[in-house]
Length: 195
Image (cartoon, rainbow, N blue to C red; front, side):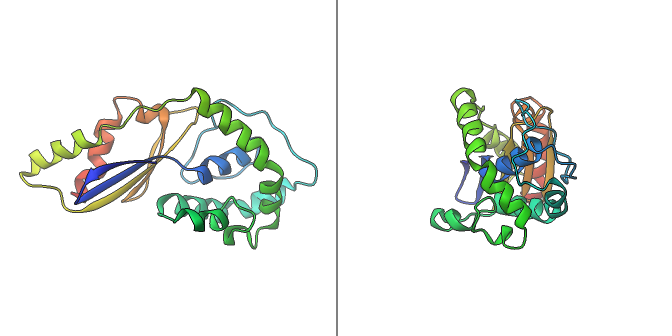
């Protein structure tokens, strides 16, 4: 996660292992689930691979609540020691305690997901977001410094541009979108009410 800001405001942006892993499970198992908001398929596209003993129908039934837990996790700041046992994609996580089908899929797909993300990390470079420029522009427009605020932008590598405010202080966005010129007005739209 990249951090930008000043003493009175803070914006964190970057990927979330939990979100990436959840989307890896969704795409690898070709789940028919509703990700609210709609999240396109990962890029590069994954081949469908269903490990033995994985119950897709049961995973689809458990998915909505787990996806909500994953998104909540992505917007929270959690100490690294706690993340080792509490992250929603860790088998010992409370988010998986009552979701045995998802827990089984996490166990079966942890190594393939790690390989996939390691390969992507070798070649993928994200552009920095123009957050400081946008905040300075908003401050000039307001004629004062912005009020204290915190914003999290969780970036995902998906096949289509997307910018989806999940809450007033959390956005789910694709790298295709954040690397485009459309990010400046989108940042202004989300930061202005917070300022």
